[in-house]
Length: 223
Image (cartoon, rainbow, N blue to C red):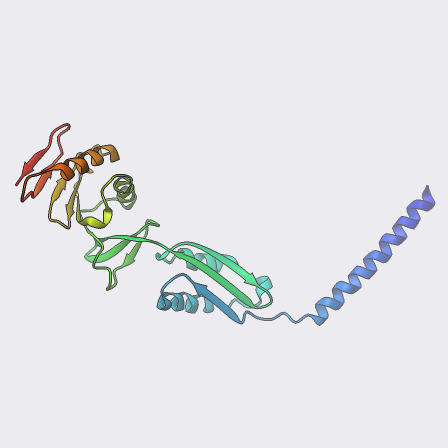
């Protein structure tokens, strides 16, 4: 029994020597390259380039010892990004695949116009977003996203909304592109919105301007 153990120990000893030798030779012969290329896709070209420059300023060094938390921190700070994936392509390339946030509406914040994204973040307004509806008032961004979800679940199209008015009582008004103002109740559901949609679809009058649905089971029209 003692002899068997001695033979096993001898075998393990030689295996350790062999693998240690292989490992040392590999490390000595392998050149650890610095990161040579970073590919970013998913945003507009100028936004991709801006993020690329920020990442390059991190002085990333070697791909094996890269601090991914620094890259992730930069990506998470970008309000245009909804989701992302970071891939290492050995020996010296990093690929970053981005899903851009959807821009829903414009809102005033401290005298400046911002865009509300589906990620719940605000982005500085740029030209080319004139089709987005404008929010008047100061809603909580999460509350707005919940409200938009109700609209999306209903038969109304959010794309047909020109302006949204938010009131301190947590009530909303919708001003559509056809210039009809829809005054909504506090306790809003997509079922109530569907009822209002059906009403407007079947309405036969002309020059309708205001639909007041603030009172339960009652609709007041201003023609």
